[in-house]
Length: 451
Image (cartoon, rainbow, N blue to C red):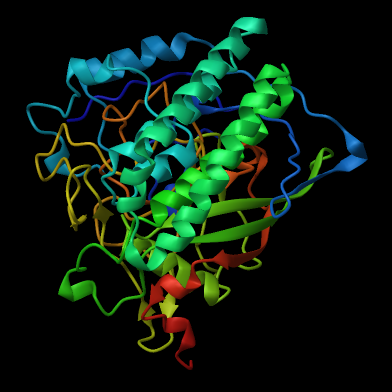
């Protein structure tokens, strides 16, 4: 019999009911009322962005207030959960082995996990080029440097920039040699822009213009990510034969999800930019992109929003997933998990069932706005159309100690306006999801078939 730690506290986002945040399953069971862990709840208020293709509209021109985590008691609670073993998310009898899947102590103390969605996507690319990683890392470290106040912070940024510039100069030939032949000209052009941008960032730091650092850093990391994508020549493995005829995303794609927010005096609508990773989840990402092209989600309401996850995708009627017109049956996809260090995903089993207790996933539940498939508790291969976005702080459940990693299929991250996910509530409407790039990477699209 499983041991469950209960906390007698109620989510401030769901004052009238107690929600179970443990089980991202699909259908009515996922929306049922259970005990909650209110520490998952974040209190975000609108924070507008000036991005051209990603925007949130605020009413009355209001500025946003800051947010904070609820009580620190979560640290104690999480520690207790790790010691005794957290209950299984799929509630399968196999999950309660005599030796629970506890992470190795060295993993827990090895440092904070990466929680920036852009960085997670960069490291998830199927490439092995140390030279570009040595440029990437110090640029990413600027984020931590900027947390230091005053001159010391800018001095640290300057060291980051000099290290990245030095690595680019010393490793440029190795980076170019790693570019796919068909993309080499584009990659070299990006490297030239990156080099110029580094010089501009150095001038910004020398001029002590702190506010201009982060936007420039974001621009340079975009160049780095694009260079790394130019290192991928073709899709790196074969999808298993039994899934090969399904819609597959062989590469990456990006979509904009526009949500109409109801009954919020501060926020009218928001556009979430989502990157789908078909390199690590081709079946899962392909299934979703195919449904997007069918306009399956357009006009659908947010169906769960409890501070732990935001979920949608359950269509009206008795069906709990997408009914394929060609078969008149629910289209389901297998559980698909890419293990770090492996060349292809594993299908149909959780990592715990496979005995891979210490394995890390290539797409972990680290970022606020991690996107994954919901499924039935007892059926690994039952996902269809219901998706959820995780809302949490990665420090609370770090990579390799996360109770969701290896049990649910992650296939993308919200990379713009992810903080606004915490403001969504049941009844808010997805006005549209539109593909903005990468549609050419979708193979076997069923939306083109009549019917």
